[in-house]
Length: 172
Ligand SMILES: CC(C)(COP(=O)(O)OP(=O)(O)OC[C@H]1O[C@@H](n2cnc3c(N)ncnc32)[C@H](O)[C@@H]1OP(=O)(O)O)[C@@H](O)C(=O)NCCC(=O)NCCS
Image (tube, rainbow, N blue to C red; front, side):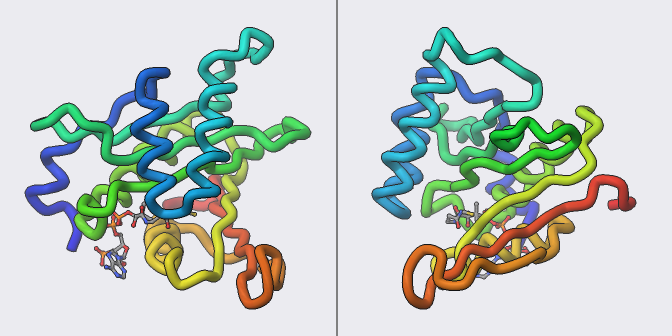
């Protein structure tokens, strides 16, 4: 079910430095290693003085209007070569009790619409073939992403990396 009453209780805001712990905790509750990696990324993103701030790298949080609590995150960045016209989605996670209510889809569409203004040709993302990411693949497909390829056993025997993309030139 999407766009229910729950969805209306959520607002989407740019992520701030003070949101790092809440966001990393949401990600860690799904996968501890990812929680640590994401915290490292966000700390570097918000605190490094060497990092050049760019419109091509942004993060957003879903916030519960009633409690003010951060309940989800989505973001994007260029690849490490800064390939023109290419963007990769970064962490996309919701707190467990907020999933399956259309909030993730809304957050993803919001993020795609921000990317659309940046004259990007193609958005890529990587996810996993593990069952616990099955819902994410459905959400990505609903938002127009297609599977481009699979790196078999990338994360370990039986767990592949799945690369998906969204062609921004095609009408959505
Ligand atoms: C992926 C995630 C952010 C999606 O957010 P969400 O709010 O749960 O997703 P939505 O409620 O917007 O669902 C959108 C679509 O996903 C599918 N979906 C939703 N709930 C589902 C469920 N319980 N089982 C299977 N599919 C489901 C449906 O196709 C739904 O579309 P529909 O409402 O038109 O049927 C969230 O589920 C999550 O945090 N998952 C764990 C972390 C993760 O996998 N992150 C992605 C890493 S690459």
